[in-house]
Image 1 (cartoon, rainbow, N blue to C red):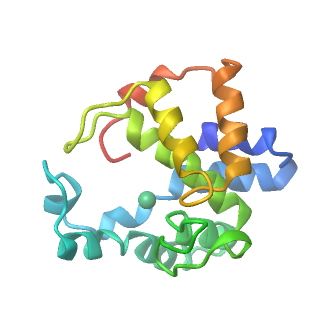
Image 2 (spheres, protein in one colour):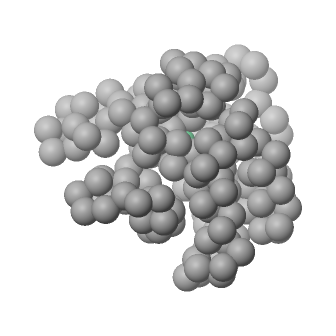
Length: 173
Ligand SMILES: [Fe+2]
C-alpha cells in the first residue's frame, strides 16, 4: 500500500523526503506480523480476546525490528502507531488525536480501506462504496476526519490508478 499512502499524502500536502518516508512506511507497516503465529494471522474466524492481544503486538515487533536499521529510524514511529485510533481506543499505546504522528494517521486510513476491500480469511471483500461508508462512519473515532475526507475525495475523483489492486491483494498484506 506504499503507493496509495503516498498518493494520499501528496493530496494532504506532504512533499519531498517526507513523501518518500510515507511510501516506505506503507510498504513496511506490517513487517511485525513476521513475529505473529500463522494460526492467528490466517485464522478463518474472528480472533479470541487472547489471540487479538497477540495480534496487537505486531506494531511493537515492527518497531523493534526496524529500530535496528539505522537508515529506517524515521519509519519507526509510523509503523509503531499505525493502529492507533484518534479517540485513543487503538493500540499499542492508546495515544489520541494529534499525539498520533500525522503520517501514521494517513497509513491507518489506507490500511483500513485495503483490509476491508480485500478478501481475508475471515471476511469477504466489501465494495468500494461500502468501505467508503465505513470510513466515513469511523471518521472522528477511529480515523482522522481530514484524512478520511481526502481519501474519499480521491476515490470520488477516480484518482486511484488501479483500485482493483485492493481487491486482489493477497490476504494479510
Ligand atoms: Fe497492521
